[in-house]
Image 1 (cartoon, rainbow, N blue to C red):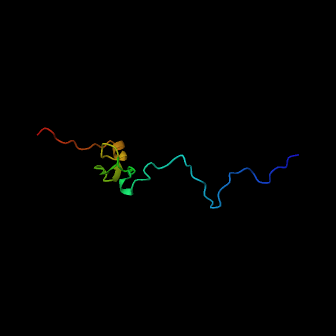
Image 2 (cartoon, rainbow, N blue to C red; image 1 turned 135 degrees about the vertical axis):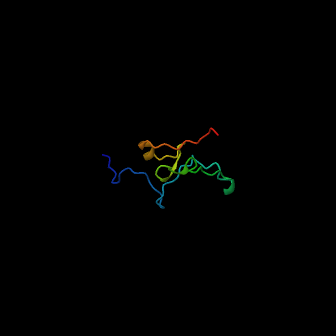
Image 3 (spheres, rainbow, N blue to C red; image 1 turned 180 degrees about the vertical axis):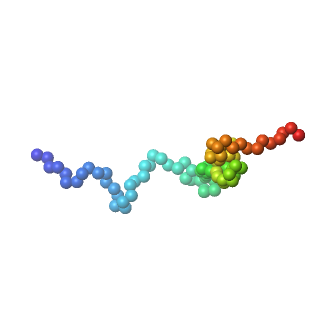
Length: 85
């Protein structure tokens, strides 16, 4: 009869304790010097810092209006600029 293994089937890890990295994915810019490598886009690039004219709250937004959500829910409106001069 077959003897069963004492150890469960687990992938072997190297003596260093780190798993080997996948060799199929490589950095295409690895050979370039650091100053020529493309930089990652900032997560804040689409946001702008505004102050709500209704309550004075300073916050970051990607919306076109400067009113914060709370003032907009309360029905506050931005003062209209007079374009008939």
